[in-house]
Structure formats: C-alpha cells, structure tokens
Image (cartoon, rainbow, N blue to C red):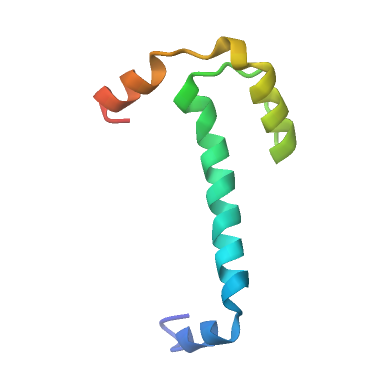
Length: 76
C-alpha cells in the first residue's frame, strides 16, 4: 500500500475495527506461545483455537516450572 501511495485509505477504517483486529491477533499469538512458555506436552496437533485451549488445559499436569527460567537465560 505504501508503494502505491494508498496509505491514507486507513483513515476510512474505523478505529475500533483496527484495534479489535490487532487485539485478536495478539490473543492468538500469545495463546500459541503458552505451550512453549510453560513446557506443556500436548496430545496431538490441534488446528483450531478452542481445541488448542482445551488441549492445554488437559495438559496442565505436564507443565515444567523450569521452562520459563531456561527460556529467559538462554535467550529464547
């Protein structure tokens, strides 16, 4: 959009739509990272958001308390 000089079109999109979309994407990304942050071992691969939430709740017993510490010290 910038190369075509169409950046001003964003002014026609309502602010709540822009912030809502950004918040939704941030929620999905944060949820996908919880598995790695907590060191959860999920049973299977879940493609849908709510299935993944249920799988993470089911796998809460596999959480590793050292995982966040190791991730921070190793730089990711």
